[in-house]
Length: 283
Ligand code: GLU
Image 1 (spheres, rainbow, N blue to C red):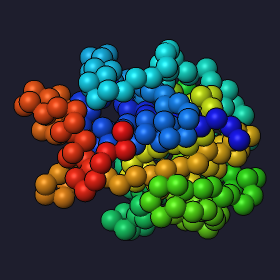
Image 2 (cartoon, rainbow, N blue to C red):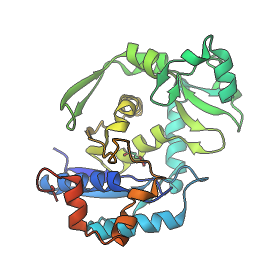
Image 3 (cartoon, helix red, strand yellow):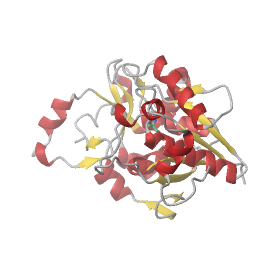
Image 4 (cartoon, rainbow, N blue to C red):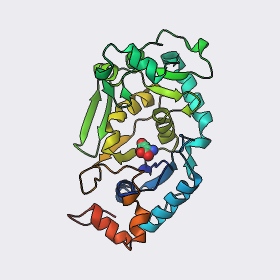
């Protein structure tokens, strides 16, 4: 079996909060228990929001928690050539799209009832007839989900986190419940789904540890891995850390930022006690 490799892949668009600490500590603990490695990857695809200052704070916060990682750290902004190669390989299953959000809403008969997938409203397929030969620089590139699922065949993966066990991904779910996902965004290069799959394979990740909020995106990642001939890692989706009112912690909510808690005098041990109130922290 391949040596265990996992990763923590934050976006440098705001402070790390308790939810990130939970994710990182879980990943590092699982790597230690498996005699493997935990990597840090900087997911800075969204150039309009990513900032070097936030990246520096990520390093600082993780070190404060007692974590370290192999260098060099990969940044997604340096990886466009690899994403372009993957996109070229998927070209027979993709098409260019120039719809704006308003176009998409207008194309739906009952916009308020537009079905929601992991990325929001499921794309109605307006541009699906267009060909890649006609793609312009301002086009978004979408995956034709029906053709992609026909090409991929049956999809399975293993969940090791919440409700662990094998999972099957059906064409029915992917076509009706996910739709033609975006692989490359107008003016922004690779989209999250493509980048994460290409990078996890590039870094030989055997298990992706991340919050349960990303569980709905996992079938997309399994599909893209298969279409690109890449190994499918295991996925470990963990519980989400909520604030006292039961709301998910948003990255922009500075109140629960690790650095704020640190400035208030909390220690890394206190953070672990907050995250694992019912027993010892795994790391
Ligand atoms: N970059 C994503 C985030 O900040 C995590 C991606 C992943 O773990 O697959 O939430």
